[in-house]
Image 1 (cartoon, rainbow, N blue to C red):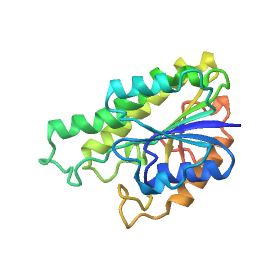
Image 2 (image 1 turned 45 degrees about the vertical axis):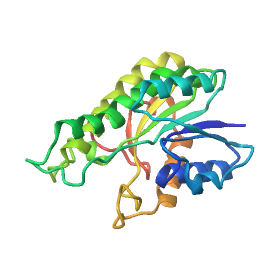
Image 3 (image 1 turned 30 degrees about the vertical axis):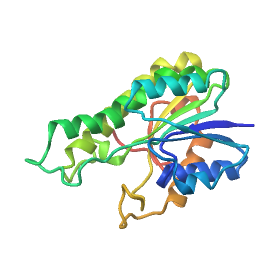
Image 4 (image 1 turned 135 degrees about the horizontal axis):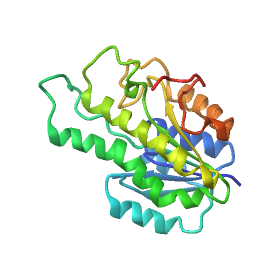
Length: 226
């Protein structure tokens, strides 16, 4: 049975990942930060293990590392993320708010990879990070959103370095743009729903090859400029 870990699984894209992979026969380790919520809890079955995790706290990551000791994973999806305040325009940026967003979106994925990369070694699995097109410097034609944009640009660099450092273990590392999705984070005006986004990402991940490691890919399979 294939196995994956997905973070931020209690709502939005993370919840949809959990639902779709369970439906396809995978064993899913699904994490939540504060409360699992009724939607995630309602999926309870022998193929689902629900675990607490705050990617911004090292102690929480260490506990998860212990809980997953000896578990061979095919896939880790770092989905947990933070947008920050809605108004991130010039003159509105707070240092502490920026650091909070960077901690979750940029530092957290690296800490998770450091703790769990050995769980991917046996199956030469994939470490996937849900990034965002807003992290693309080349495609930034709107300005503003300093906190969120910079945190996703930073995690893209983390992905690139991880792809080089984990190559010897046979682990593939990829940055993924989920699209503008109708979620609590994406808002009600998003262009696609969670089902479309996750179905597309699953197709991308299913066909990832070692030569794709270190790339930045849209949910529809198209490459995104850094």
